[in-house]
Amino acid sequence: MPFATALTRQLGIKIPVVQGGMQWVGYAELASAVSNAGGLGILTALTQPSPADLRKEIQRCKTMTPHPFGVNLTLLPALVPPDYHGYAQAIIDEGIRIVETAGNSPGPVIRQLKAAGCTVLHKCTTVRHARSAVALGVDFLSIDGFECAGHVGESDVTNFILLSRARQSLTVPFIASGGFADGQGLAAALALGAEGINMGTRFMCTIEAPIHHNVKVAIVEAQETDTELVLRRWRNTSRLFANKVAKEAVKAERESVSGKFEDVAPFVSGKRGREVFVNGDVDYGVWTAGQVIGLIHDIPSCQELVERIEREAEETLDKASSLIVGRGSRPQGKQPPPGEVGKNMNNPGAEMWGIGKTKI
Picture 1 (cartoon, one colour):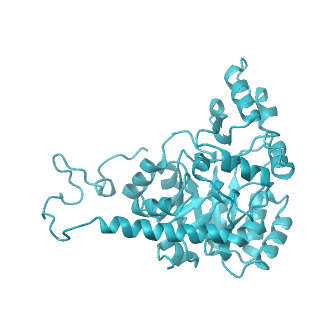
Picture 2: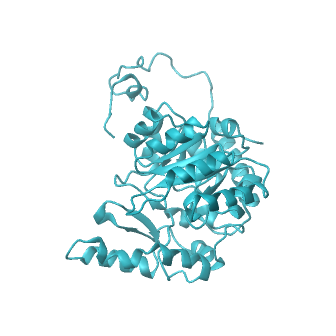
Picture 3: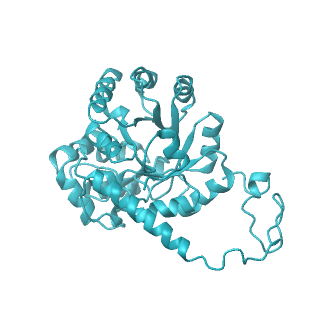
């Protein structure tokens, strides 16, 4: 049966599964298929060369699904920044009211979207950044663990810890991103306090994903150890599929004497990475993939995948509930009042009441 979480209620979806925005992957074919399956499909704004082209892609997606879908708008450092406000206005003008944001200094764009009545899901890799996003008025936080594909942040905190920290200290509902591929993962995320999950790499490996079949086969055949962390030296770390070029990039980065980005730039060309998805040569350029590749073993349709996740999550939650025996038999009065930390006790509400870690 459909789930009822803050995410499904506010977005109007049946299953609390969001297809994350992915460069050169988030086209109408994939977004519409995910939305038709009961999740939330996401178009990637910067995959389109201009705001006008994004308008056309939104219009095309509307013809492919009657269900809600969103648009990802990621703000990244660039010598010549894209027209972020133009992309945001295209989203607004086309009547899209669900936007996934990410990246640096998103304040002006988030304010623009919120003024138009958009629901904003903002991706963060730390609780500290999440708090800043809350101050901007975002509706949901997408908590991105170190396992994720692409930009992993610099704190190297995995989701098992990061989601619990979010549960302890955030006042805005959040979804879990990074390391999710199945219903057991969805059940775990819900148990840790999330309202749903965000999946990128898993949706790359579906029939409708508009990328070459060879890339999907490479994901299926890969292990969880088959990723590389690139650009750590410049604190712009990205997790990539461990192909020939990614390994050469890591070697060039490690051995660079000058410490200049130019020494590694030829290996991390985005244009060459885009060509991988077109020509099917998985070693032609770098492309992002999360450690979750170790959990992916088939190439289903989005409908099959979302239905499977729903079924597995229900079964997992039912099984977990059946493990509880003797309800009502627990001794009372063992937990200290909010704001107090008892001897040898872990009080998860302490930080919310001003006690505990505040700098993470």
